[in-house]
Every structure is written in structure tokens, then in C-alpha cells.
Image (tube, rainbow, N blue to C red; front, top):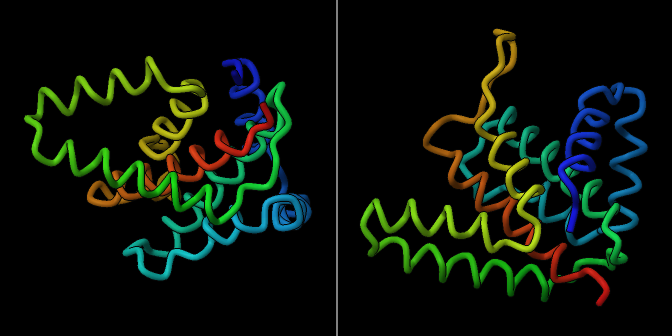
Length: 165
């Protein structure tokens, strides 16, 4: 399991990455995790604006950086791992769509308790909900935070499924 310290250190390192170093990190992800990288940048059917796409990419790259530090080797996440992760998340959403608001809240709280990487999942939630004091930082629009969360959770689930036993 990825510790809170690793999540915090990685988040801080990513936040201080210069625009000069960013292309090398992106290139490394493209080489190590081509399917995951494609999943992060192929948002054509998503209603995200450019800023939201950049946030999803940034958070996704940070998640990859965190998962690379697992005690278990992170293998390449395959298209099959992504399909399974997507199917499982869609199934969970369908169950929740018929649940009451209280049931939905309880289910999401339970998800954090039982989730294999709760610190990384918590980072995703915090990162997409984060509001900045900087007026130039535009957050993800409220109506699309759930979609951003789902997309990034699918990424994380595929990474978890790709960890060596």
C-alpha cells in the first residue's frame, strides 16, 4: 500500500516540477505506460475544457508516479485492465444510481475504507476538488468533478490490477 508520506512527497514534487522537466516525465510515462497515457489524453468524448483536461492529465501523471513507488512492481497496464476497471466502475455507478443519497454517501465512505490504495484515492479526490487562492487557477467545473473522479479512479484501478503479486 502506498503510504501517506509517499503520496504527499510525490504531490509536492509534482507541484514543483518545472515546465522544463515536465516533457521528460510525460515522455517517460508514454514509454512505461502507453495505454494509461493514451487513456489520460484521449478525452475526446468527454465534455472537459482545456483546463480540465490538463488537470486530469496532471493528476493522472501524479497517480502514476505514486504507483511506481509501490513495494510491488507496477507492470504495464493493458487495455484489458482498463476495460475491466471501467466495467466495474460503471456497474458500481449503476447500483448507486438507484440508491438513496444516504446510501451513496455510505458507499463512498466504505469505498475509502476498503479500497486497496486509500491514500492515492484520497489524493485524487482532494486534487480534483481543490480550490486555489490564485485567481488564475481555474478548478474543474462542479458538474464535471464526478466525471473527472471516475476517469481517474479507472486509471488507478487499472494500475492496481497491474501490480505484480
